[in-house]
Image (cartoon, rainbow, N blue to C red; front, side, top):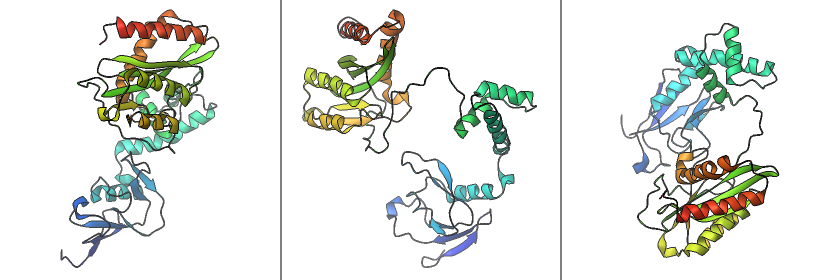
Length: 331
C-alpha cells in the first residue's frame, strides 16, 4: 500500500470498507494496526458497550454512514476481521454457529412459557415445560438463556440487597487488586456491611478490618443502611489508629452508594486515606471483608438466633468483636 493513498474493498459479508493510511485522532503509540479502519456501515454496527468497564460487543442500530472503528469507543480490542465477521453473521444467520442458531430458536419458546405462566416460572419449571412439549434441551441451557434474556422466576422471600451502586457518583479505582496480605499495619483496610433479620425488621452491621492483622478496627450496628452508619464505623477506625497521609493507607470497599457518598469520601480525604472500590457483584474483589461477614454470620447470627431486637444484635456483635480481636486465632 502506498503511504498517500487509500484503498477500499468488500468484506466477506458484503459490507463496504475503506482503509485509510493514517488517523489523526489516535496517537501513533496507540495504533494496534498499521492502518486505521473505517467501516461504511450498511447494517447494524458492532460497537463497544457504553460502560468503560466492559469490553463486550453490542449491536447499535445506525443510519448508513461512515464510522471509524477507532473513534467508536476509542480502540476496539478486537481485530477488524472479527468486527466484519459479526456484521456478516447478523446479515446472514446461516453463518452463525449451531449453538447460536439453536439459542435463537429457543428464546421465543422460553419467553412464551414464561409469559403464559404469570411470569413466575423459574429455570426448573420452564425446563420441564419445554421437555413436555418435546424440546430436547438441557437445564443449564435454559438457565443460561434466561439469564441472557434478563428474566427469572419469582422467589418466595423478598429479595434484599445491601450493595446498591449509584452510577452517577464518581468511582475510585481498585487499588487492592485482590491482594489482602500486607507487610505492616495501616496499609490496607477493607470495609463492608451485612444484614441480620430480627423480629422487628432488618438490622445492618458494618465492619472495618485491618488486612495486616485481620483485626476489626471499626464496627457499627444500625436499623437503616444509610451512609451515616458506615461513616460511624470509619470514624471508630480512624480514632483507634490515627492514620496520617504519609502512611499511604488504602481503604477498600464495595461499590455501594454508602461508600461512594460525598460525606464518606470527604472523610477519607480528611484522614489521609486513599479510597479503593471493587466491581459490582464480585465477592472476590473484597474477599477479606466477605470472609469476616461470613464468620460473623456463622459464629453469632446463625448459631444464636432467632434475634428479637436491634439491641440484642448490637450486644452480641460487641462480644464477638472483642473476642475476635483478643482471643480468636483467625489471624
